[in-house]
Picture 1 (cartoon, helix red, strand yellow):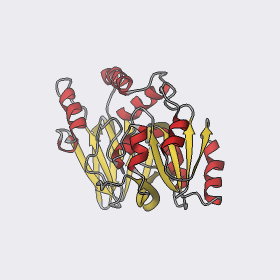
Picture 2 (picture 1 turned 90 degrees about the vertical axis):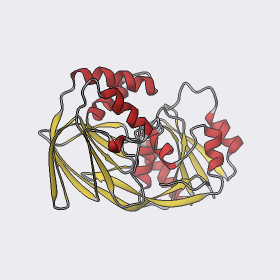
Picture 3 (picture 1 turned 180 degrees about the vertical axis):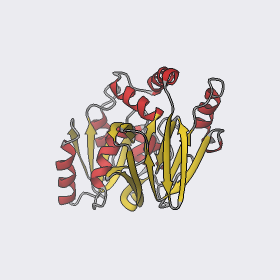
Length: 292
């Protein structure tokens, strides 16, 4: 097994350890380490990895790094590995990876590779979760902040909630439709945003389906309880939450607006055509069995 570790030099800048040195000391396979400062660097890096017969390209960073690396590996020979050093590490947690880097590297020492689903919206790929509405607004505000971590998410979310107005969405899947006023709509291939906030706790990256979660705005009194359910893994049973499963879904809203793909802020049009891409990405997973 040959590995290439791609280190996002902007991720985890406050860490108190040298991640490159930790990799060299802990990785049991032949490997190389390369830095990446810009998203565009990844195109040449992934091309090189495939040309040189690299087995695993490790995304060393947070969910944004994983998103950018994974979408370049879809349908290609190298597998995605993850060394989580970000603030949320949602997809790594979904896979069952420890978020302590040394333990994370050790957990994959058996070299177990599986093939998972990815997804796309209007042709643009994403790996774990995309969202529109309130979570998209928070993602945009978080990206503009100079401070990372769960507390920043909480603060930005609290500020946004005070003035946020729900929007009407029309969802169409198979032969069914749903029109509803919602705080947010999350489309989940994997289960969580990060920090174990599980918006779609039953989601699987190997079932060929997307979990669509429509959340109506709670009252100020109910909001803390819903947040608790988000972290307890019972959000799918929360009052005001509708869950839909589909391989393809179309969502329409009044106009173009904010969205996020794996936490990365983007602007998307009024009509969103979203579909799963079954068995499209190879991923390195922990040795111990884990429900994916």
